[in-house]
Length: 307
Image (tube, rainbow, N blue to C red; front, side):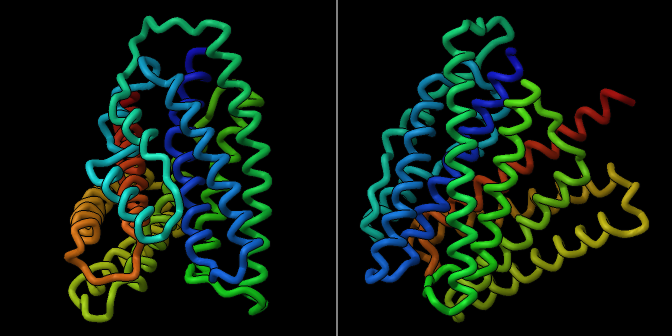
């Protein structure tokens, strides 16, 4: 049960934050006249914020040092990005949760998995699946209504599809944890295909949200989109069996991309880059790159140990 507890908590620390921010981005993107849509997005934002806070409170001394050190939970920019986004959008953000995450300590192999923590994790997992069912349905409804030209939003339809896929991915992980009390972490090829597509779409969004005057940054974002497109072609081509080689290429590319995103986040938070991107969105995509880098490193490490 120890792995079940740790994997569950680490998954929620990453993805409950992701979902609450998805809801915030949707909420911020609706016109003021569409109060019903805004209120529905806000409801999901508040509920996932509550889940995140609950998860943080029981994660101290339990989760791995690798997760804490990766900056996939919070970065050096997260607190400031939240404060700026709250000021710019008027949407409240509980930054006390971020402060708590900054103080988290990793666990040891001797951490005791008592019935109380197992029960709490089991309850969180069940609630998250229910919430995700509702959020996924909401995102699908938003996407369909936008496609039918019955709803305006400042979020690209592709971005809505993007955050929908991430919610479905999250649900698949938690469902497996609930059913099997473990996580197969999926076939690594499917994991890389999923996250390389996510990284490619990040580049497309970044390109579209930058001011047209930011020519160099736009060109760099285009290059990253093309690079991840090529990785996706490799994964789906005849040489897809060369898994380790693609994993290493994905890691090399994502490390470079992480540096680009980090510089971009610093520039947007510091008001030095012209864009229409919320500061928290810049930090959001940086954290996802950090998360993906850790996954790739862990896979390469496993491969070496199995040789």
